[in-house]
Image (tube, rainbow, N blue to C red):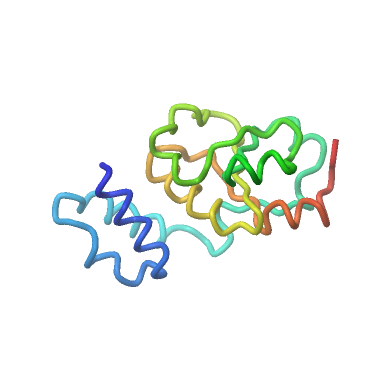
Amino acid sequence: MRTSIRAIGLATVLGLAVLPMVVQADDEAVAEAITDYMDFATETAGIILADQIDKDVFEAATFFDVRSAVEYKKGHIPGARNIEWRSLPGRIDEIPETGLVVFYCNTGMRSAQVTFAARLMGRENVLVMQGGMEEWQKSAAYKP
């Protein structure tokens, strides 16, 4: 599985254009799942905007800050847990399988990768907060 995650990370960085070349033959099921998801998903599937997170959504969601521990300590969404983005595969069991889960970083780049990886690892209840912490600070509908 480790090879698959590395291949997926590389493919994400390269815009998924080279996915068929980097996914090994024994990972055909992963490639098929990615293709099926991308064929089905809309452009905005899997995202939530800060201005959509009102009090009800905030209280129902589990937030994960996927930035480094140093960034997390400098400030984070109240109640958010910290899982550095690269450590998600080894910590997937910490991600609830039910309920709304929102990943965020500074701008949405790292958290988009984490959301994609979490979905590949079976978590269908995860969203990325587009714009990340920067957008949260500017336009969150609810800030406790």
